[in-house]
Length: 449
Image (cartoon, rainbow, N blue to C red; front, side, top):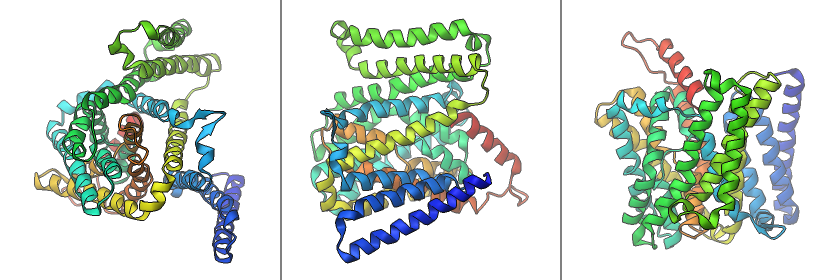
């Protein structure tokens, strides 16, 4: 890091510390009205400091989440409506953009890899859609939460793995290629498995509409991911067609054109297509944007490098932070009532996923690298998807509370677990760490996440 950035980073750390001390002082002296700005500033400065630190940068996203949650708790109206527009309506489009970003990190090889490692993937899928839903239902019952909040805990468990699992698997010395494949497969299975587990378990708590949830998952998750796969080919293909100005111009125009036509012909579209209208609009518009951006950045300006790999993580991070802030603001009163208990329930739920994911994998004699991978995949869930389904399908902000808490917590716990495992390198038969294996893991991470 350049000296100027390092110096700026140190200043941010000191400012964060001073603001934190100010928060404590204001609380002690009873000046609570000024606590909000200081607390938000402390988290924001700390997040910026982490972003500039080589080791702590993996925790920056979690600190940003705390900054947004703090802002939404102190100023809930700021995340309610802007100029009369309900920000809650942004949740689904934001999830679609995030899932499109996930799709751009995937290729058909990630799905085909299941045929090369069928047993680990099968075990992972069984554990993914059994351990976490059942654990969520058990924890919700033990804590005696109201039905909607309890259903939200089950919903987190019934969702597929989260994309953060790929990075965590790498840091933990796991099998990154397997992690990417498991995330991809669980995402593709989610239109069937998530509504099924919700119907079987959460259906005892609230009304669950199987078909409506299935169609919503296809619209919110599958369609954008498929669009992202197309964008991946446009971005990274070395074929001549993907690097010609004329063809990229046509792809850009086609992407935007399909999006506009879908909006214009909404009333004339078949009911089946209407169910996926939002996903089609977002997906095709983003394909057009990717083609146009590559045309301008790579071919016109001549900039090389994987610039999209730097842009999409920032967009995803900002989108998830905003989603969590909106949900927190809309469910503030419920959170103040059951917040501490819900946090405890989320921690237990997440921990059960890691523990059972690892030891059940050991039970069926998977190797250590695979056991670590399965544990992380089972423990880390797609909290954004759960939040969107809670609001859009279940129609409950209270059900979205557990996913909103699970998201930041799993990043903390996953980072801690991955760091701990990183300190315990997997040995080869000769007793030495496997540097070749580590190189392959880095290659898989660079190509897939």
